Length: 455
Image 1 (cartoon, one colour):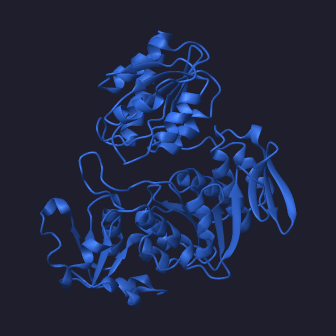
Image 2 (image 1 turned 30 degrees about the vertical axis):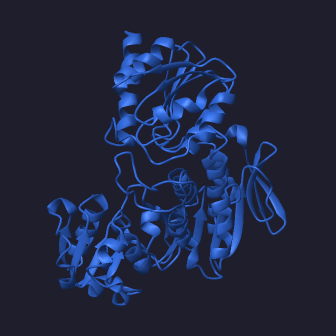
């Protein structure tokens, strides 16, 4: 792998090399396309080709590992120094500064905010990574003056040896752990493995780099000892000396002893106080990258958020429908629930991610505004016992087997002023292809209801 690092001429470094790309998904296929264009001899190997699809790895010069393919699964066939990944290779070859964002939730929103702020400042900016755009799509367009924003998952961070110039760690809570509902081992066996993978975003920084960590979550806050970079903090719960925080109705930057108001929280379009964390992280990272406070503020006043992330679908007869299908953990569902004071009809449940629902149960029991819960999927049976004896009456609806039944059940009991909130706190695979399919079905059915109402 060292043959490829810091090469100014990528084509020469890769030309003629015999390379195996492991995994035929979106990232794997984009890696194969890029490497073929550089003159490499590329073979895509995928598990669907058979159980012995890895048996001839020793015959390749380089192995490109796709997200979700464990290093340990490959090391039994070939030495570790011949294994890389798209993210690792990109970081080694990228000629410009990178802003990397990781965390259990919020990284897509934060990365997109940073990208919009950089563009507002007229930087030559690019956005890629876990957000769905391969950085190989724009690698050849980059100059030393460009800036790349990468959303980075734990899978992508696991084997990197070069950290971003600005590394951001948002909230870290359990995910991709243990075994799922059918007994399949998820990617990380322990929380420690998951956290260590995330911390690679800071691990290889130098004193010329910047680390941004979320003070509000222990696993994130304790990551500050894993970097040589200059450390800044973000928080929506307390003031920080160097960093960005939400306080007294404002987002405030504080560096070098100076406090700089950025925007009033009432001017943010993004709903929910949990988004203050993402706003603070994006504001700070962009400010450190050279974006003016004025341009940061303008973006924050206009940014509406990402699809399936507490997305306002529409309003029907005074009822607002929100798609938060990206909520696959109890923590994100809690954040969504606490984002509204209006009466809520909550769609909750799905397939297992080995989550602990105790706190979610407590929040629901204590909430004053949850009018009804439509419980769905296998995990609903785990959640339901935790919300017995709520402080205020909650209508429980269960047994829906399709999104059509779910949405029509919500529409039947919703009245003007209510919020219908799809924030399942669980994965989607027992009823849907993925969280996008779940969210798309919800939005399409809500749109159909609105169309019928207007006819």
